[in-house]
Image (cartoon, rainbow over all chains, first blue to last red; front, side, top):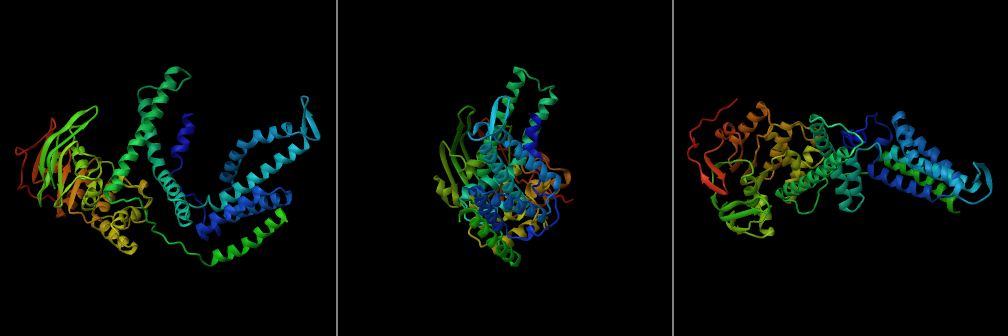
Length: 260
Length: 226
């Protein structure tokens, strides 16, 4: 458990994913967010295998175009698949329909099997596309793109502050954890461990709350009146228009296959 | 800035300030000392309205301040340097953070960028504009927060343990910069040597009471450079 804490808290240093500048990186972040959203919507709403497989192929192609690190991408996609594996395994057995085969007396239906397959295709297509288009920008850029797209301020601030302070909180956790270790604390499956870990998490919350108050004070001291100013201009450039010119017909095709 | 009969108490800690009268004059470089938990930080917070006094008056920049609205102007003219630089640096990049203040003061983006760049230069941090704030070292963070405060062109500086956790070099740099500043300032610190290079007036907060501490006053201390 400790490992998983540490992982989510601190292994995320710097956000900058190491990869070479690809075609995708030259695109306007706002455009990337919009394209992913439209793509995800079309794929998720779709019911035809043609659209789903086309979507998956395109998404993987996009990932190749973005020069994603193969290993890391695979790890992330598998992490998501693990999330759904139960659903996919269970669906054939819980959906009524024509029996395909049976395990220990439980029949697996064809309809359920097809349904599970569709869900898996959808999820993977969307995740690949997300990793390629949005996963390649820093979280800060994503926040700014969202702000420029008029996403509610509160959500944007939430994201930007999370990015900024995740690391600070992670370090606080590590510091306390080390202080515990320095006093010979070892994680065991007993009440003492559970209580101590509870204290640790509780303290972390208290510290975070207090820190947030101090941050608010510090912002007030510098004249904060509830408004953030964005320092970067985002302008559409030639590659963006080219990309748009490719996306629009593609989305039209997906839409046509879907609904017409 | 002036306080009259300022009183503050915490629910569990009891009274930390008991009818404190204090006046900051032009050119004052006040060293505010006292034991841990004496209420030094509380006093500074009260001066800019981050906490609300239980009793007493606060006058700043020619007017009495009582409501939150009235303190907004005080905060615009008094630069507050927090104990922990991480509390102050909340923007992703250094430039954004330093220009946050000027933008709040209604400056245009170009102006704010220019002011921020100049402020960074004045604390010897030119070239750090695009750096990510949480990846800076402790000393760099401190200098950036100082630049962020100076970028607002404050009339008064309130410094809460500015030399905390600085190495010798960064500490000297800070002393040199602070010596060159014309503003009146209140400096909280436990570092007497640091204070001796800067202060021309010593004030001690202990047992909820504020006393001028003449024993330590050494006004003619020569400025020492590295």
